[in-house]
View 1 (cartoon, rainbow, N blue to C red):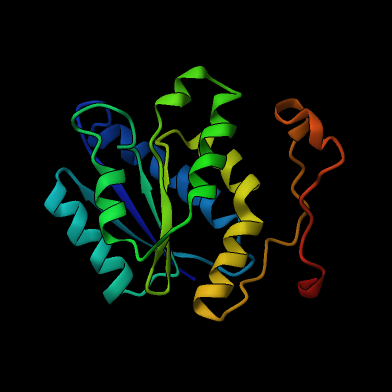
View 2 (spheres, rainbow, N blue to C red):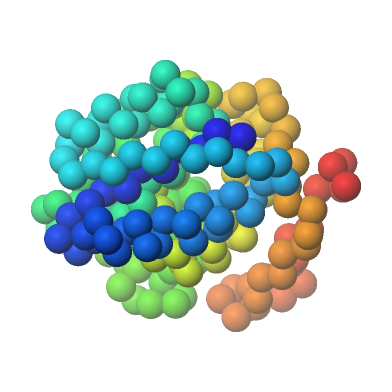
Length: 188
């Protein structure tokens, strides 16, 4: 599966630090799917580069999944949500809400996130935080919704990673004590 990864570089995320995290971030995203993933990585520093990267990955490369890393805060350099919303055909607010809810239960600073998600053509675009540990947890939480969305927009049912992923959701969502994400039985 082809996955696009766009990283916003700025003073907070210098190139060296971002590259150090890249492999860990890619592993976290790839763990959603059973099939091998091929990443197309693009680093951007401004609005024009971000817009061009999103258009390239969605329209030309036709990546089923495009993730952006960083740039979702309230600062003047945090431009990812605005550019993403401009280019989306259909917004999926549930993803942004889940990202903020998950992160807020770990740190109140998560309230500053303006992450959005949606569909452009046959691509699901997700704005993710820049911390690898947060992305691993989010991928575990969002994986079923990601696969379902991809099936609806591409017509292809990607198989989930076959190993059960235990998420201590009761720690973050006490009302969901019995909830566990299991592999889709149709693909076991």
